[in-house]
Length: 490
Ligand SMILES: *Cc1c(COP(=O)(O)O)cnc(C)c1O
Image 1 (cartoon, rainbow, N blue to C red):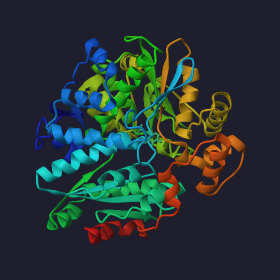
Image 2 (tube, protein in one colour):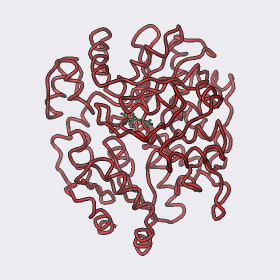
Image 3 (tube, helix red, strand yellow):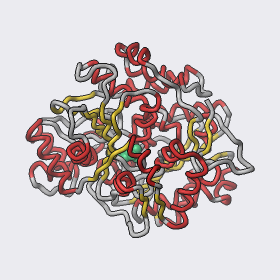
Image 4 (tube, rainbow, N blue to C red):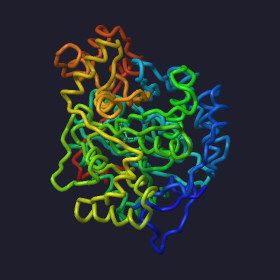
């Protein structure tokens, strides 16, 4: 399987690249992305055969059908990491909340957010490519809270890879910060930045584009890559759980094989939703993918009205910070798939130059064949958290809560819904404790204890331990000092 480019081909770039190449250098011609040239087709036989498979067997079969240039034993090692999830026999439990509503819990990995689903196996794949090529890589990550811990966890002590992870000091929850600053492997560097997430993100983009920085790294025999969510090496692992979740509904006799469902995804950079879209294109039985947002509702506007308008929009902080995004990078791959490279280049250029693009009526109709969308305010989200606990004795986090709004507004027929839950309650406990009891906690530890008592849930050991671990990563610097600090680390 080869990968083509969403904005066409620049003259000094190869026309198509392998999976490894797309992973190591994920930015394609004209600032575009790599997309699979074609998708493997899954027929009814495939789904039937996998009704009795484990998650790992399903995952390996799908990965092999993509026919990527990665050795089978590496793929096996990658999916073996799902054994570290809470239940090794079912890393992604799908839970019935009520008659037509099921929640697929994507957060049972080591860092308690759905980023582990892709980053855990991705770490094995990337470091094995680096080792095979006998090359050393510096992976940069900028995080608002969930990607950082997951990236550090997956690359910890891996050969040929070092990670520099930047986070906004004071801009994450206690749990998220502790997950990063207590990591003590020699190949990891965590840098707190005096600023907000955008400052970390901008610093990362500047370093990725800086020839001076790359030259300085080269002198130390190191190449540069990034673990951000446009990397297809992450997307490929996000196709699998959509297919798994569907099969779970069949196994639970909620649906019969072939019956269509709604996939409802709390969306930011659109990686999760894109995985669902590819799964559908490969043959999964989907009625519609519902895109849920918070007040940063640019995706709702795109899908409802066909306009992507950044002109008067600024990111507003919400209680679901992992979705506080306006430039949703993976949407580009859907545009490419539906409208082709020329039109995608035109639309993305317009977005960069005019901060705006608009689809034609025909294009919007086509987009709406696949997607519907709605957004949810923080206040509404808190109500859903409270109501879901009181009525169904089920705790959801503020990201997942946004789906409960769109479930009401976009899925009001008999079709079953799968809502994707992207974070455990332990990662956003002050908001949840506030929703449940009205209390205002400034520290996660108090909120964790309160929820644990109210909902009779135990705090998982990897979260509990954080509060006793030694803080090893103490660097907090001005954003101007980042480059110097990273070079010192290398
Ligand atoms: C990253 C993240 C999201 C958004 O996922 P995308 O794939 O970027 O759309 C939603 N919820 C949580 C908790 C996340 O960490």
